[in-house]
Length: 176
Length: 73
Image 1 (spheres, rainbow over the protein chains, first blue to last red):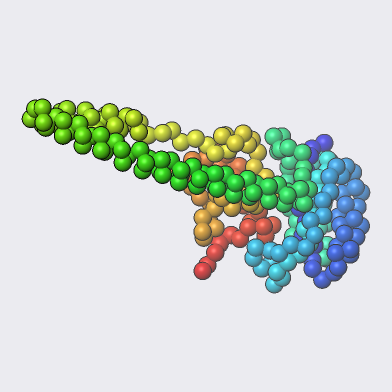
Image 2: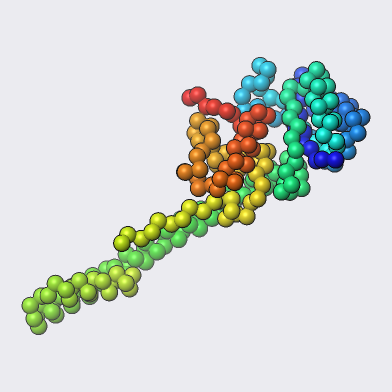
C-alpha cells in the first residue's frame, strides 16, 4: 500500500453540483472499485486556468488522496484517459516529508494572513528606516559644531595638525 | 583586507520548510521570473536539495494550469 495524490480538472459544461456528482460517481467510485482507500477529498470549485486548455478558460478542480497498491494507478490512468468530462488529471506519490493535506479554502486563508503579516512588517521596516535617519540628522548638527569648536581651539592654541582632526572625526563616527 | 562576503543561506532552510507543495502557487510565484521561467539558484540562494523539489513543484503546477509556462507580452 502506497499513498497517492490525484488532482482532477472537470469540464465546465455543467453546474457545480453536477461536477461534485461527477467526482463522486465517476472518479472516487473508480478508485474504490480498484481497491483504493480514499483518505482525503477536497473540491476546489470553479477556477480559471493560467492558459487555455482544450479551448477553455476555466474548469472545476478537485484533489483526492488515496492508499492503494501500485498496480491500480495503471488501470485508473487507462480508464480516465477515455473518460468524457475529465479535462486533465495527474496521479503522483505523496512525499514522506509532506505534511497532512490542507483544504483549498484554508490555503487561501493562509495566503491572506501571510500577505497581512508582510504588510505589517513592511510598514514597521519603513518606520524604522525613517526614524533613525531623523535622529542621525539631529545628532550630526551639534557634533559638527563641536568639531568646528575643537578646530578653532586648536587653531588658537597651536597650528592645526591633520592627524588630530582625523581622530576627532573618527570619534564622532564611532559615537554615531 | 576587504570583509568576507556574507554566506548565501537557503530561504527555505531559514523558514524551516522541508517540503514544497505544487498547490502553493503564492509561494512558487516568488521563485519564477517575469516571463515565468524558473529562477536560478544563483539569484535566489536556494539549496540544491530544495531547488530540485522546487523545479518539480513548478512543473506540476504548470501541467495542471495553476501557473502559466510562459508570458509573451
